Amino acid sequence: MKKCLILLFVLIAACSWQVSKEIQRYSISERTDVFQEIPMEEVSLAGSAELMIKAQIKTHLKGFYLLESKDSLKGAEKYPFLFNIDGQAVVWDVDGKKENTLAGAGMRYVLEKRLRLRSGRHKVVMALPSESYLISIEVALSENASTLEFKPLYKVDKSFGPDFTRGLQRFNVFLNGKETS
Image (tube, rainbow, N blue to C red; front, side, top):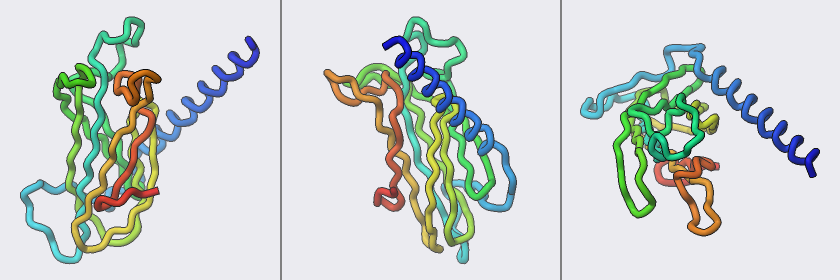
């Protein structure tokens, strides 16, 4: 039993290390000509695709867990979202807003960015470095406006169901309202 626990710990540490290395790789821009951020009120340009990116996460407040690292970004004023589209990387530090709901007190971070890029197929990588979480998807964009939305699924508490205080399990991703695989 002791050997199984040690092996499990080693496997978890190796997976976390691998994800951290991937996040580090995607945080470096290889290109700068893939997309540009545009203001919400700006008029669309003919001949280009427009992509609205929406993502959010709720974390517990600082001090929720007694032994949590002081460097943890959970409950911090700002929370980093990393995006890499076809080799162009950007980190958006999103302001948090305290929220107290039936699910509990926490900090919600809501990202909404509007981008202009060429129509066609694009590889989109979204990562949360503080969660050691990364997801990569391919999207096909036309010259119309599209919305790419990342909806969080939280780890499950056996008694209460999904619970944001237990951390992120994964994101479900939707392009124009349809779930991507």
